[in-house]
Amino acid sequence: MVKLVLNPMASLQKGFTLIEIMFALLLIGLLTGGVVNLFKVDLDKGKHKENVESIEQIKSVLEAYLLINKHLPCPDTFSSADGLEDRSADGSCISRKGYLPTQTLDIKAVDPWRQAYFYQINARAENISRVTNICEPASVFGKTGARTKPTSFAQCSSTKQYFCNGCSAGCSGTCNFSADPRTSDAPPYFGLSTRPFGGSSTNYKNLTIRDVGGNVVDNNAVAVVVSFGQNGPQTWHNLLASGGSCNGSLHIPSNEKENCDGDSDFIAPNFQEIDDRLIWLDLYGLKFKALEKRLLD
Image 1 (tube, one colour):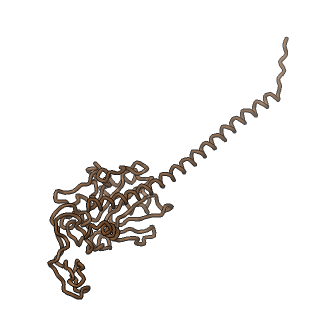
Image 2 (cartoon, one colour; image 1 turned 90 degrees about the vertical axis):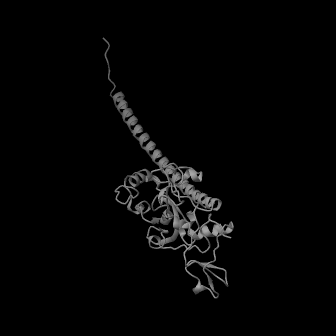
């Protein structure tokens, strides 16, 4: 008879091998998870960086569009969503907010998270008498229509400077109320005398840009473009579901709601503060660029 001799050390060694295998698998899992998390962090940083670069390019494209076409485009309305600006038959903008008209601008349609860009403009661009009036900030959106001006519009005889609200206070000569810097009903409808009229909703409907502390950065903005960042899908869902305002949503950080709550105030953050990114067009800046290209001669 063959006698079997059990080796207790063999069992012990086998037991240690299983523990070692389990430990190794656990270690591999932890390492893999760490690598994945690091990769995700790097990926997110890459997308944020790409977003900053992309939205700055959009600003350049809008400025170039203005210099070529002598006006800014209207928003692509939420109901349209075809990438084209939406105007009424009279030439005014159908809506003050909507999607960026990427088809009209011939640019990439989405941000790095594959979400659309939000676009809001001076509210008076919805009124044809405003977009063709040389003294209105909304006149940067004027494309067609009969040129208009207020009855107080005048030129100083001594300096040849135009004033929107009469010129007696700043003119040593006489005020000529029949003078007109425009000779045709065509863009650009804005001019050197077109005032920024800062102050947002209380004065001529310009948009106000603030920092996260609530301090005013610029209150002469006539257009704003926003990428809602990493949580863009949720923001857009709430924005569209509520008819253009995300103010009541519980799923959007409170310091980001200012950029989608439907009013005329926006927050321009630093990179670490919120992940929204935005650019805006200031009327002073637009007039300066138009002067460089001799559009306002």
